[in-house]
Amino acid sequence: MAEVVEITDPGDLRLADYRDLRDVQLRQHLEAEHGLFLAEGEKVVRRAVESGHDARSFLMAPRWLDGLADVLARTDAPCFVLPEALVEQVTGFHVHRGALASLRRRALPPVAEVLDGARSVLVLEDVVDHTNVGAIFRSGAAMGFDAVLLSPRCADPLYRRSIKVAMGAVFSVPWTRLPDWRTALPDLSAAGFTTVALTLADDAVDVEDAVRGLDRVALVLGSEGHGLSPAWQRAADRRATIPMARGAEHGVDSLNVAAASAVACYVTARR
Amino acid sequence: MAEVVEITDPGDLRLADYRDLRDVQLRQHLEAEHGLFLAEGEKVVRRAVESGHDARSFLMAPRWLDGLADVLARTDAPCFVLPEALVEQVTGFHVHRGALASLRRRALPPVAEVLDGARSVLVLEDVVDHTNVGAIFRSGAAMGFDAVLLSPRCADPLYRRSIKVAMGAVFSVPWTRLPDWRTALPDLSAAGFTTVALTLADDAVDVEDAVRGLDRVALVLGSEGHGLSPAWQRAADRRATIPMARGAEHGVDSLNVAAASAVACYVTARR
Image 1 (cartoon, each protein chain N blue to C red):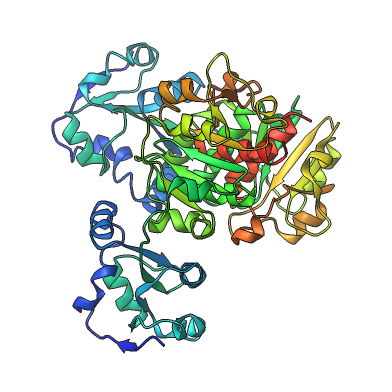
Image 2: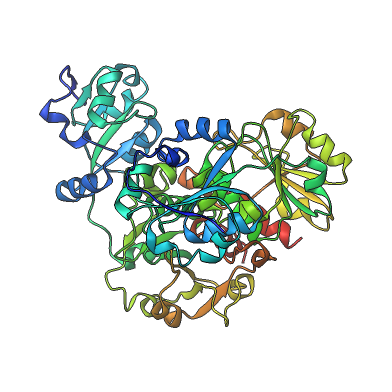
């Protein structure tokens, strides 16, 4: 049972996990150093705890206590309670749906564990925007993808913004970091997946044709600015593209990575 | 030929159009009152002018003058030139790709003009996020959609962020505001379009079945939070859904509106 601790001083040192939530760089350092991440909003806090993450603490205005009573009953972490206006003073912004939790990050699972039993997998290379990473998790989850693998430079799926945009799918879809960028795609092929790289390359085929009838598929998507690296484009078993219809007339030759992933997941789910 | 005006004082009153670009509310007032909008970045500035928008003025650091020389040659608006660091002081943020332009908004065209000759149309109800509006324009343009119609409460496609996310497609895809929210969908049906509402309603059919074989289609998408209003769901000729595969397992029962529009545009483009 969480101990409810009423706090009146927004400078209280026990609130250190919740400081300056709008400062992305500062948060990245703080969260990495202490091995924590933040969940925001009653629903997301609940999902984070229910998916097995240990809470370090909770922070909320009084009116959120009742709704989260069952979650708080199952933990020994303290629950700091402050008036709504002071919560905002601590975090530096208006907290959507009032409740926050600071949770312990877990060790990332090995790739083989994440791939175990998986049939449809997303592989992201250097997608650096938290919103895009979150949106891709959400689309993947909606389309029944079993796992997400991230290159070392991809944005953090457990950053507050990623979690929110993903609607919490980062807690339920198994994911991990690829330990070696160079061998990632050949390793997937060796594990029985057909790696399908989304690209605008001239020799790319229609993505519907690329995935048709395949059993285990790994859809490979590149970064926001420049798409997939040449090395990954070469290493993939197939190069595929989402056909554009007269996009050139409008000066648009591609979808953004979140839109492209939604379409590619949709097509792959119906293969 | 634009007159190049060197400016040394960031407080110069002639720079009023470019103040405080990060303050969304202030910008919305200022831009509405003066009938202007801002284009950011060499490519977007060029596209804004080439699509026929009159420039009020330009603002850039010296090194962008050469690249935009042909654009500046065709206008009589002044081009204010400041050292890079002062540009940032005026706008309140680091200007991506250095050049800005303030352009005159044009009167919005009547719906009938926008629909003239169109075969595939997007209709947005209360999509309030600039990023989503921009992303939907980009996906629509990439998939060959001919026009976009916006309910009165939708976010402004000519807001700086919308333009950027749309890759400038807001300049090339014809669009306008719907004058009457209540009669919008029946009016479209009367104009020969089959209105297809994207919804999670129980009686919705697979979107591929809903659009198959149709000639003129209007895809209707709702707001970020609650989707389409009941009134528009009822008024649409067909209710359609993007099938989710096991999304429920992950607590995800829908795509976000930008992802949903990408998939729906893709499916509709291949009808």
